[in-house]
Image (cartoon, rainbow, N blue to C red; front, side, top):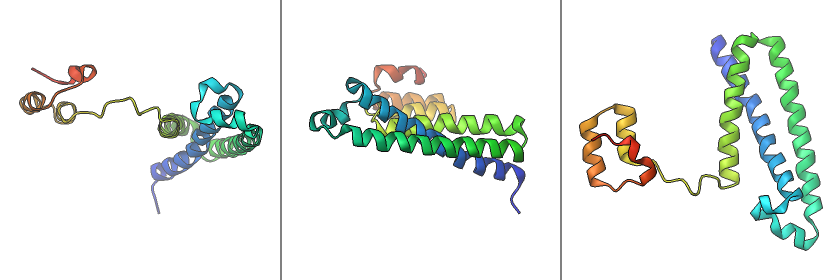
Length: 148
């Protein structure tokens, strides 16, 4: 039998996936209402079929929100709210950022974390970090990770 923490975690992750997917859906809906905010969907306005996509996304958002709210209410009856609420909210935030970042390509302009930063942050080894920083050019916004 799984421990109580594992059950909390599994329920929170699956619940938060519904909520975070609804964030992506409503962002698509807002992009259809205000087209300059969402570049990939500018073609729908020109073809006149944007409203079909709008209705599908809006109904999808309503269904996802209904499932999200139902699962939250059920979880509050099943689990201790002091433990469950922070767990589900942190999962909701994490999956919303990841889902929106992937779908709307928000991560495209970000540089990949250099090896130097990984060595400094995860190992805390200034000598290894100095060697890696010297061997590989670092983007200016990541220079704070390098020691020395």
